[in-house]
Length: 79
Image (spheres, rainbow, N blue to C red):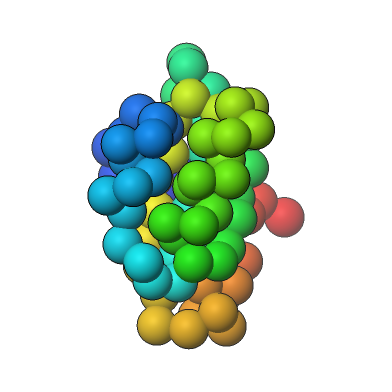
């Protein structure tokens, strides 16, 4: 299940302005289809995603800790 938030364009500007906090993030392709989920310090993770260039869009939910980010991910990943 995807996040119910609007997609943001995944580019250097988005990565640079992302909060420097733990989060669960969802990466998507240009059509808005989900490519995958990840967790970590959001700004660092998005900078890496931009460098790899596999995704065009992103959306996220902030977390209080790494464990909280993983719980958010687990709640959204289809089983």
